[in-house]
Length: 258
Image (cartoon, rainbow, N blue to C red):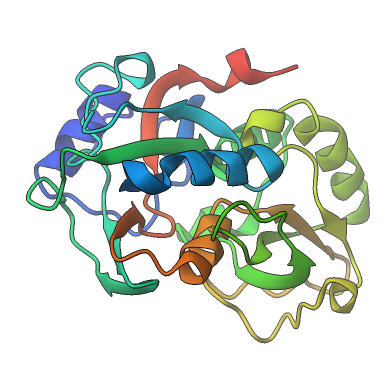
């Protein structure tokens, strides 16, 4: 796939292309985490997001049954235009299809939540080179001991993504990403992973990316956190993006800067 136009990329996903990661695709465009669940649970989930804005910053929320979100992109169909999905049944992952059109229901409410791949763009613009870019992999993900603020049946602990950075770059990363609260904002924690219940040798997702001797582990709140909430809520049916396979919107990251 040579084009980095969001419309072309979504068309390729709709046609069945499923890259391992969408990191660095469509440079400068906002990428998003995806959650869809029945309307009966949507208000509680919206409240969960509102109470946990670092982990679940809402970019868009659809109406029941609405698959197209024009404000997010031209002809952007939530049921076909992500590289891969994860279907949840009774609070556990059950399937990982590349298309959910046959699973979509009239009562489904779709959410797009801010994603760290967007603030990575800002770090790249500042001259930083993140090590997982070279391999086209995903940053490692860890479950912390920090509880989310619950809403209804939605609860769980915050999930974080980790990027190893040299101390000077870690300081710059705090300054840069704090301007982007709608895509997780500043790091949640730096160094001393045991203080947030993280063992760097025990990932909960993503790919291995151990800090080198001159690097600090830098942790950001992660859009996989809703998976913790779905496990706790044990909804009969819900759908998320597959980790690393993000929704690519037509929005520009620069427009989210504060």
